[in-house]
Length: 326
Ligand SMILES: C[S@@+](CC[C@H](N)C(=O)[O-])C[C@H]1O[C@@H](n2cnc3c(N)ncnc32)[C@H](O)[C@@H]1O
Image 1 (tube, protein in one colour):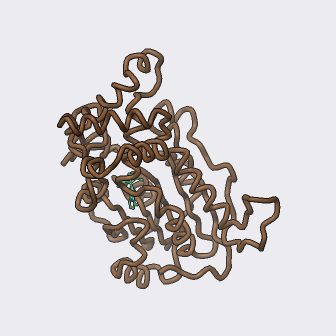
Image 2 (cartoon, rainbow, N blue to C red):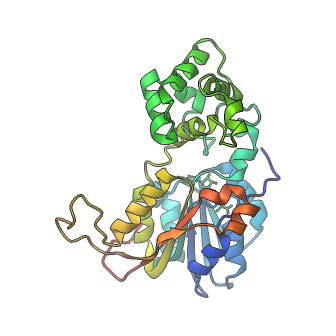
């Protein structure tokens, strides 16, 4: 396990400015990661606030714990933002520490620097690593195990749908050929299979992203079920807010952002079709702050290039009857 990874929290200033924590505020961080946002939010808050950090990745939780040190205000819990709501430990914490709900819920989606920098996790093709790609290393199929279960069609579908890769069919064929010929063991083997379809050098010369990036994204999203429970999780997070409390969701690619945007707009009572008028009124639970979301400044992108595709969307809970979770 890599122990010295620094993840630069994205849109940090924007998070601090738009997700204010009252003196005895309650904060739910559903993607604690390496605790970058948590550290900043905790350091600006008073002794009576409480911060619950959830992450599915045991290595991230261990590193966050080390980074944040002993802090009586902080609790770190294992879980996913889809399922944590049913966890008795989570429910007990909410019951005791946040009986009126949360002032702030933060979701900073996707993978962290830990996943990309630790080659043993199998997310990166810069160095050869095992074909794993699981955020939760204790559960689920590894990328290789998942690929072994695919047909050319299902693999191509995933690479097309979640990687937005137009050459998905020949790439799927090349990957399954490498598998059949016992040449698919590492992340670099997977990347090499992609390069047989889209050569690497021309893309590099043109300054385009590595041709393997989209295929890795597609497989990673499926292996981790990244988009499946996102909309429901946002709904539950909004239901867990106090009136006036705010949710902030940071996405990193268009597929994620579309789900975040559509879900928040629906919760804000906005009709997005089909047709100009909603067939029935849509209950309004949120007020959107910055309809278009917030993108990083040029300075941030310069200092931290991975932030370039990030978008922060924020909603403020209205006083209504949306049932409390849990
Ligand atoms: C972009 S990082 C968060 C970084 C964090 N805000 C920081 O500043 O250090 C996203 C984190 O969310 C976690 N994660 C991704 N999907 C998750 C899910 N469904 N449930 C819980 N955690 C998840 C990942 O393991 C990763 O640690």
